[in-house]
Image 1 (cartoon, helix red, strand yellow):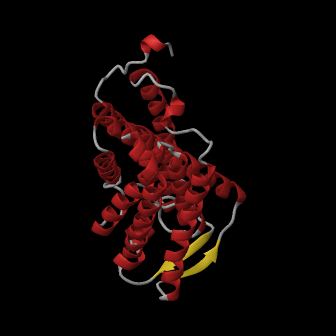
Image 2 (cartoon, rainbow, N blue to C red; image 1 turned 60 degrees about the vertical axis):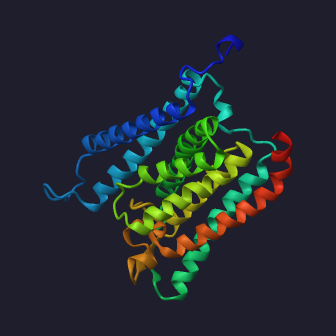
Image 3 (cartoon, one colour; image 1 turned 90 degrees about the horizontal axis):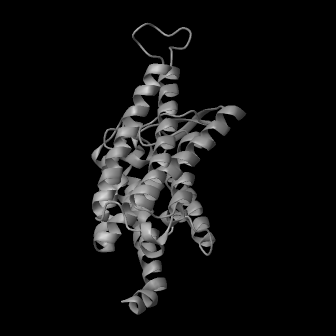
Length: 295
């Protein structure tokens, strides 16, 4: 990238963000169509009534293709529309190792607390255990891809570009709202789930607006999704995945999350809100001197 060719092809950061979002939706639609068209019914499936196994295979293939398409698309946008290196999306590893570790542990801690709460209230039990190495490895790879793809799109690119056009807090709010809109058609969506996805967008972006680094968000996103779906057996944002544990949920959907997973539970609302306030307090104190100096 030569110095003379570093001016973005499209000047407005907010417009670049919107264009990538529209392209992301197009990728998701295309992936869904490919997944539905290329997967044949499994043996024993009744005509016109897709089996659970077939539906799960379509979901997995669609998620995989959406992640791959999104990563490639974001790289193209960053290189040829923004005319910046891909690393500028927030992929600097040092000195953000501690942030990455914090994000990873936070995802595990929050989902663990929520699960223990459900278990203690007799809203949750596990009825069976299934472990197959190939399924577990496939789920691991899939959740890594999803974390990378969604964070590259919504934090690395969209939030990054919105921050070039407006106040960081407004940019954070808009990016979180767009993140929620991207999940609004997921199966099992509810008002509580929408609020929680919005809070998740704020939580995932909180570190970014202070550091311009994406590793906290990727590691949090991965640990939350992987533990939620492939391990504990909840649906992940309404999408069913093969899991090690087979859960049985009892109680109202606003408590258990129902078919949307833990992201549909009011317990998650409290956990995400508390984490947001904690992160704001920590980052505001840590970076206040730097912000004051730069202003």
